[in-house]
Image (cartoon, rainbow over all chains, first blue to last red):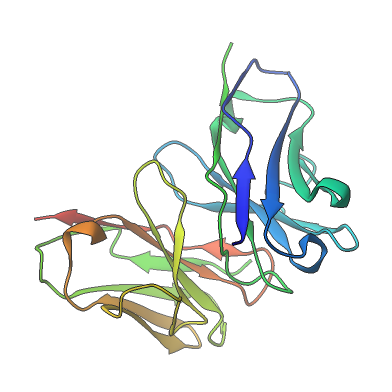
Amino acid sequence: EVQLVQSGTEVKKPGESLKISCKTSGYSFTGFWISWVRQQPGKGLEWMGTIYPGDSDTRYSPSFQGQVTISADKSITTAYLQWSSLKATDTAMYYCGRHGTYPNWFDPWGQGTLVTVSS
Amino acid sequence: DIQMTQSPSSLSASVGDRVTVTCQASQDINTHLNWYQQKPGKAPNLLIYDASNLETGVPSRFSGHGSGTDFTFTISSLQPEDFATYYCQQYENLPLTFGGGTRVEIK
């Protein structure tokens, strides 16, 4: 069974750094793209970017380019999303999701990581 | 970027009703369109991929049609567990983009 298990809830202050994770299992990690999606409170879904762990090819939405970094560690089949300096507007639920051999549909999704940024 | 315009943004319906949601792309996306269901506090769940293909395990009351720029998603007979928010998503080009969502509420 393909599973994506995300790290737990985070509460941070503006300006702090953060790295959240998406641990995968049940398939060949290097052969499928993984994306990150943001959902702000009461809002819709926004694609942030994607990575192909096989060669670390990474693509970002223009809206998130330079704001976050997506990475992957093949040795532990885990993808990451990180911020160097959080803002209050980064408060959201963040989901990882697996694609196929190119970024197509999301299946499955991780359970989500809630990030709250508040002074 | 390809813009996805989803309508309506919300609707009220009764159990047993037929419900249709539309999604319009700002340019031709062939059949590169997916539909998801999201319940409160949960991750989205894939229902339909490539415009009309039913994901394994998804009830047959869900269906999708369309190609090019105009797509529809239908629930043939609404069930109590179907009250949720539904999103379309295109994968013709990066960045991947979602419609704004349709919240299906109980009448």
